[in-house]
Every structure is written in structure tokens, then in C-alpha cells.
Image 1: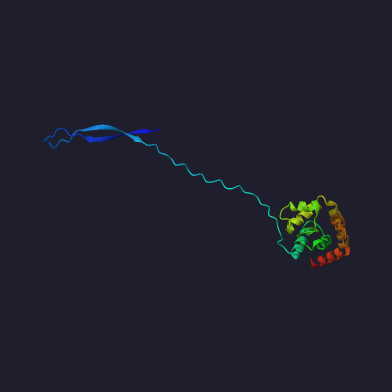
Image 2: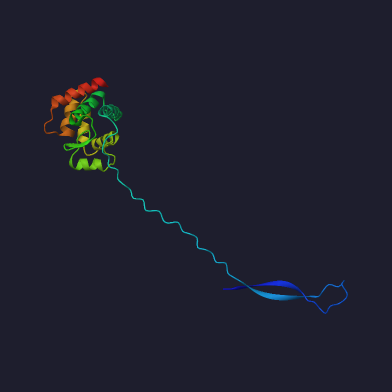
Amino acid sequence: MVALGVSLITIPIAAEPTPVASEPPATVAVQEEKKVEPIQETPKEVPPKPAPVVEQQIIPTQSNTTPSENEAIAWNFLISQGFTRNQTAGIMGNLQQEHGFNTSDVPGGLGIVQWTSGRRANLINKGNYLDINVQLSYLMEELNGSESGAKAAVLAYDSVDSATIAFQNKFERCGQCMQSQRIMYAYEILGRH
């Protein structure tokens, strides 16, 4: 579409030369048609769409804590969950025997209690599964759920020996338990805390 614009141009018209210089020459208004070109807008550049964000699962390869740090963290955690010092020592004597407070994944099992099979898979699904806090939370999730019988058995006793054996038999259900070793570890841990 072409728009037409109108502008007035004043053009002096010279008549026959006159000797009178005081009169200005007559003017005539002439309309001139001008074509006005339409303004063409340059299209705005649309920024490219960002690439979709793809969530990546971070698979931990090692823990950020040492076994001795894990022992202290586990002690405080279990006490905060309502276990007595003797019951906590009994549970932790088992943890020491199982994997020495290492949170790593080895052929015999995963983490501080050496989870295997479906229980191992459930822990892995928690994400950051080598973290001591994740493993302790999962331990309590089991003790408050599918392994509540083990928790009840430990809470039924207040001696180190009985709490150690209750956790060993009801939670760990080990093949070769080395019960006397677990009890010895429980007393050593109790002495450190």
C-alpha cells in the first residue's frame, strides 16, 4: 500500500517585468503529489530457545566423611531418635562389625549396615546414598516401617549385650554373626561416647 502525502510548495510567478520594485511577485500554490514509501520494519530477532534442561543423576563414588566422623554422627543421631546410650551402643556395635562405619558400596553390601537386594535398591533410590545422613535416615525409615520389629526388640532391652543381640538377630539377620565381636565393639563405642 502506498500512502500519498500532500505538501504545498510556494512558487513565485514572474509576470511581465514591471518597473515597480516595491510590489512583490504574485505567488500561486501548486499541489504536488509525493509517494510516501511504507516503512518496512525489520523483523525482530527472536532469541533461540535454550536447550532443555536434562536432570543428571549424580552417582556418588565416595563419602565426604571418614568412618570415625560417621561413628560420631551415628551416635548423636541414634540418641536423638530416642535410644538410650546402651541401646545406641548395641546398634553401633553391629554397624562397626558390618562395615566399620564406612558408607561405601562393596560386593558384600552397601553402607553402614551392608544393605543388599531390594533394601539396597531402595537406599540407592534416595539419591546421594553414600552420605552418612542419608543412610541413617534410611535406617530409621526401616526401623519405623518394615523393620519395626527390630526397633521394638532393641527398645525392650537396656543392657548393651541384649540390645546388641536384639539388633543382630532382628535387623541384621547375619549368617556368621560373630556375636562376641559385636558386643565387644558396642562396649568400646560406649566408652568413647
